[in-house]
Structures are given as structure tokens and as C-alpha cells.
Image (cartoon, rainbow, N blue to C red; front, side, top):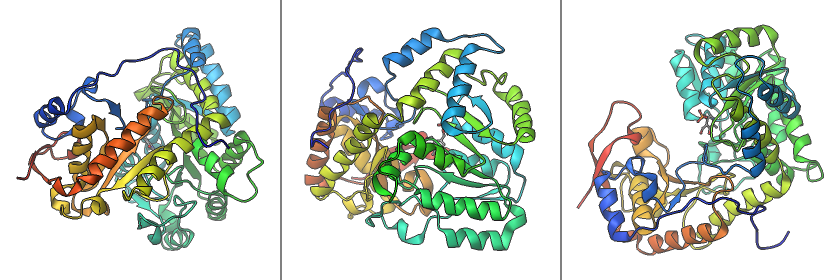
Length: 449
Ligand SMILES: Cc1ncc(COP(=O)(O)O)c(C=O)c1O
């Protein structure tokens, strides 16, 4: 492959970025009480807060938006959506939802009860919250050695098979389903190997437990399998995706990721009886089963986006441009979660700012400094988000799909290097006001002098 990764698209429509000054940003962050969620997007130069719903749609997707059929029942858009999802993932029943967490809410309300245990390689936070809302337990089964941010492994998203076997031996009657998140978002956008999916599926079948995949980043995971796993380099992304999902009984999906859409999701299953119960709930909370909380035009955008996400030229650019950012800052000495993930780079702020104790939120201090120095918005994943139990102090730089060019990423690299050069001058933060739940969204902080 060529050394320079070019964006495999031309730009047809642009959205201006307003470039503010460091002095302006110092005022903005102070007024926002050092919380990046409180900053208006017009005050952000490069927005790496999330890769969810922030991707740029293609001209084909915009054409699909115009074709959208807004009929309440039996819409043509649903037919196109249903056909695309069935074709790609191979499940019998497809239920549209307004985003990923709505699919999770319906799944867990139907499938789990108080005291149940749902194992996963690593649950995403909305998945965990929806399981806990049913008074059930969400259990992460990542191998202990993967908790070391500096350990390099090609499939650092894999589930620990021994831990799964032990959990089943102890609690078989309490496990209604097994989940697998591909790629593992909370663990750094790390992929799961085909061998691991197959092993988990064998165990699930042996014990008659359905296996569901959280499919948000299915195409990125398939690309990693093609690049890194023996026997897959000659296979198409489409065939790898088919094989991954052939081992599962259903999936949940947020189309805001590898659907490259601004909104949407779905829930799939092969079980007719279960799908009818899910549809009953869908009608109650989301809408009729041929639109499920979405406009017809959204269904068309998703149907097209799912295919575009599997294009190998797009995936080459996507995965390599994310790792380009990771490698450049890692080579400079910046500690990042290794290896670089598919959709994001995670800076280890605990190692970056060893002089700031976790009680003074090194991740948030670093995220605020990146904003002040370069107008870059990132998110803290550490003690501010998870409290005292947080195992790491990370800053996530999530890369929106097809949104930024290499020069934007080079700018991000330059700012991170500048911040690294002056790291000793960065000070910690303290909370002055916080809500009871999910404090990172709205907590107010101030600097420690
Ligand atoms: C792995 C994973 N699962 C589920 C979700 C939830 O999807 P949504 O934000 O569409 O509700 C996300 C969103 O970030 C995710 O990353």
C-alpha cells in the first residue's frame, strides 16, 4: 500500500470551522466550568468528542434521503433497509430502532429478569445501564493482561474463554444470553478475532444460550480480521462479516457508527416468537415495525451507509488514518492505549501527567488543555466519568467517519506534541458542583492553583 493515505472521496459540500484564539478559548473553557460537554460546537475547531452520528454522509446517502418513503406502514424505505440488513448480517427478523440503546432496551426487557447475569467481552455503558435497569448484572470478561494499556495484542477485544466457562459452570440457569461487542469501544476500539467469536459461539451452543453481537463497528472489526487473522487476507469484507454473524443468534446495532448515518439502529434475531415480543414493545415505545422511531429517509440512508462502510478502500483509509494519529504521537513519546484502535486513539493521561493524582482528574485536565491549546474537543474516560473505581485515566480522541482530512489530523498531532512538551505545567482540577448520576456530562470544575 502507498505510504500516503488519501481520503477515498471528493468533497462536495463543506461546513465551515471558525478558528478562535487561545485567549478566547481560555475564557470559553472557564465559562464552561472546565466541562467540554458545555461548550458550543461553533467554539470547537476539531471535534473528537465522539464518532457516533458525526460521520459525513455520501452523495448516494443524500440521494437516498430524497427517495425516502414516509408511509406509516409498509414503506418502501423499510423494504430496502430490511433487504440490506438481512443480506449483510443474515438474520431472519429485523427491527428498526431510533438508535442503539433503544435496541438494547427492547432486547433486555424481553430477555432478562432480576438477578440474571449477562456476560460480554466488555459491555458498552448504555448496554450495561440497560441490563442494570432490569436489575440484572452486566459482567465483563476481558483477560486480565489486556488491562495493561501498553500491552500490544492484535485482538485485544477478545473474550476470556476460561472466565466464560467458569461463569457458566457456576450460574448457567441465570444466563439468558451472551453478548460480544465488536469492536470493544470501552476497551479502546480493539477488535475481536473470528476464532474468539467461534469459540464463544461453540460454548453458547453447547449450553443452549443465545449469542448476540453488539454490531456497532462490525465493518471495522472485519477489516482487522482481514489484516491480522490467518486465512482471511484474501476474503472480502462482506464474506468476513457474514461469517462473524453466522455464529450469532441476533445483534443490536447503532447505525450512527458503521451505518455512517446521523441517527438510527436496529435489533435482529432468528427467533420468530422473540421477534414478535420485541415488536410488541417496539410499537409501545418506538413506533410501527416498518419505521421503528425513524423517518423513512433515515432507513434509506442506513441501507446505503452499511454497504459503504464495508468498502475496502474506505476501510483502508479509516483504520490507517486512525493508526497514523496513534503512531505519530506514540513515536513522540505520548503514552497511548496500544495498539491503536479502529475508531479512536486513547491517550493514557495517568502516564502523561504522573504529577496529577487521580483525585484531581488528570484526564479532564489534559482534555481541557487540548481544547485551550488547539480547540480540540475530546472526552475524558477516567475518574470523572467512572469515579474512584476507574481503572485508567484516559482521554479519547474519537474520529468521526469521512469528516476530517489528513491536514486536520496533522494539526491534532502538532497540538498534542506541543501539549506534551509543556506537560509539567498542566494543573489538576476539582469539582465544585456535580449531579447524582453520570456526572461527567454536567459537573462543574475549577482549576487547582
Ligand atoms: C459499542 C456500543 N454499543 C452501543 C452504543 C449505543 O448506541 P447509541 O448511541 O446509538 O444509543 C454505542 C454508542 O456509542 C457503542 O459504542
